[in-house]
Amino acid sequence: MDVAVGSPIPPWSHGPVSAEKMKVFAAIARDPNPIHWDRAAVAERGLGERLINQGPTNLGYVINMLLAWTGPASLRELTVRFTSNVFDGDIVTAGGVVTAIREGRGERLADCDVWLDRDDGTRAVAGSATVVLPDEPPERHRKQSLV
Amino acid sequence: MQGLVGHAFPGGSFTIEPWENVLLSDIMGVPPLPDSIAHPAYLFHAPLAGAGVRIADIFELCQAESEEAVRAGEYHWVLHRPLRVGATYRMSGGFTGVERKQGRRGGLMDVVTFEIDMHDEGGELAASAANTWIFLRSS
Image (cartoon, rainbow over all chains, first blue to last red; front, side, top):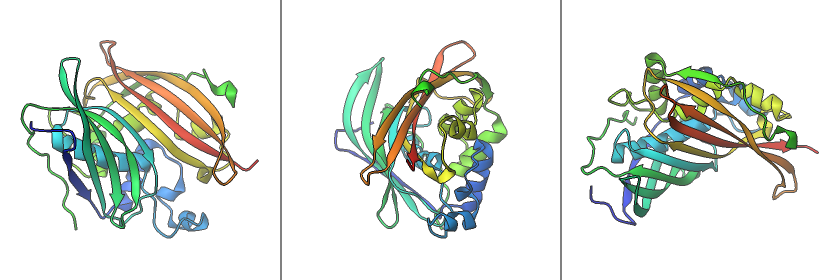
């Protein structure tokens, strides 16, 4: 796989972010915070009128970008901060850039800066990741279509 | 709050069920990954569930003043090998850091870190998740 420091990671877009999926994740993760499933609770807290996506889901979009780029078993490390909320109805795009290429435990690794941006340009997630670089680009796993 | 450091979670195990991986992958916006690889987003809720602690328990242990007074800080996840659908992982971990800070607007906050290791059925460390949550304090 031909990658160099400064190479951009192919972006991964998703949306509109689904309120129904927030509810399913709240149930799976036993997340009691109503900002993920009750619009009235969001409004009462002065956070707007749309449900707020769970942080791990926002992180999941970044992971999707990395796995589409280097393959489903390639993720080794991820460190992120959550810098802004993502709301239901948003379109989001994960992006990244290679910052270093190195060897580790017999694997060819790429360190990357990664992020997730809302369609209004607000950065929702920022951080870094390490992935194993395959010899050949993987067959890109399908993403769900944008509306 | 400093007494939290060293507090261990009960511990236990978590099995990545195929049906749940389908749902979690759909939530993340992708079909299930090939070769029985589970979506890495499991590193949020699986360690907690397997360690025998709920989000609500963390809130209570950290004396959260309300749900809206809690923010996600930094997440640091390490995967030594892909997580597998159908596999059972043993979890161990607890609180590893508490730091009282003053925010830019003068408000107080406790920055709390908890770390959970996931060992596979052969006893090998498969993954680790260290999550930092911020608990805003009114006084």
